Image (cartoon, rainbow, N blue to C red):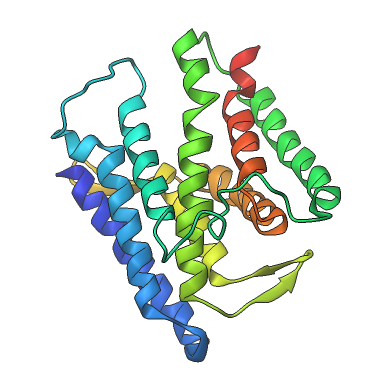
Length: 237
């Protein structure tokens, strides 16, 4: 029940924030796509939580391998739909011509941020499963969802763009990063909602760099690699 209430709170925030953003430019606002984005968030949450514990655990381990894999399969299936499309959602290894010259310095900035975080907050002893998980699942599942199909849906909901730092930004980028931060910082338990501003900042703000890389290169390749680097760097020392 806590998970469903938490999801409900997230969806209400998304829809309210989206409606307010849409009112700033009604001519370029498509409410249908905002509702689709909300549905995507709900689908992702259902699979990540193994249908809130209703599905039997088949994989085992200390990490949520099954939930991540189920959510990833759902994301890939949605991306394959004609309404989305793999290439349009960034599921391609091809990089936009000339984009890597600008992307590599930004990627190094992203890495530097997480190296700094690792030095300030070193991890304790970890086992092989933890290293394997952090080197794979978070970056693949989360980037394909948040910077892939969810960003595509939100960008379709808000067509207005502002050129900044060499790419075109829309409300979709802001809202997708907000949701990414909330999945780490916002929740419901013990009869009340909780929010951790520090966790929100440490997740939502770096995700803006991932959005920049996704838009600049047209691919999720660099965001996936960098996300897993950020998650696992501190575990390797």
